[in-house]
Image (cartoon, rainbow, N blue to C red; front, side):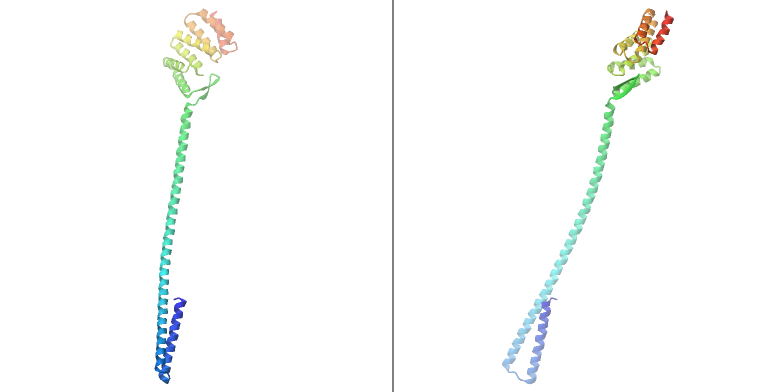
Length: 264
């Protein structure tokens, strides 16, 4: 109840007490005349009406306060609903952010796998450093693979198959760092199957294209062996003399000297 409503009630009580006291006093003493009684009654009625109006105003104020409280309660409930909605939205946002972080991590992992796989595939085609017969050179992975496969056949003693594999290698990789060695072993495979003319041709071709190759002295000695098989002893002695002159410090030259002693 507001202060204004309480004040109106107090006025009403005061007026009511005064009116009753006046009436009692009049009836008891019979001092007032009729006009004065009417004026007193009218005044009392006016005061009663004012009091009633004040009470109605107070009730209206009280009702207004109740309406305001209801509106305030509804506003608070609405605000609470908004807060809960914001919390839910924030939670969804955090969940989406966490999912995004997981997705990003997965993408980064897949990207790393792709890059690693790409590096591995590219590495298969990158030249590799090779050391063969005391010489260092770069070779394509395919060259290394094919040469080693052909030599594996040769080591098994399958000389006919090795002749085919090494011949294909020489045809395919004419400028490879493997080629001088491949020609040397091709000549040996041909010698093993008694294909002497082709064997000599390959040894001679090797000496022509790679005279400083570490296998060159052995190739010259192999030529002399072919010549001996072909009954060309004169040619064999000449080849060994040239070997001793061209590569005097080699172990192969020492072997040639011993054979020359027997042939003479």
